[in-house]
View (cartoon, one colour):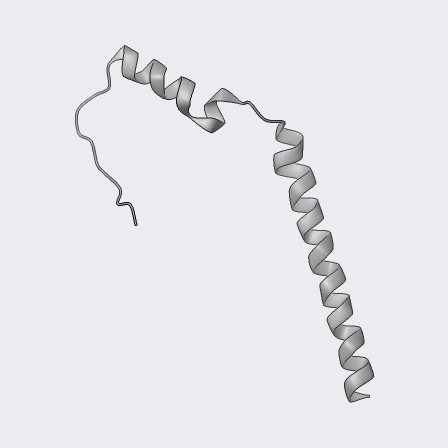
Length: 63
């Protein structure tokens, strides 16, 4: 497991620019609509379907 490294010195301009190019969220090479809306909606809908399935299964088993 990696540990968090605390760096006390300030980054120079080239380090800052390298970080801006390498960081996934800063590059924005993705569609934010898909990442923050579509994927969570699919996960939430799947949870609702599984919850309904569990309720239906419990109704068949215990009632």
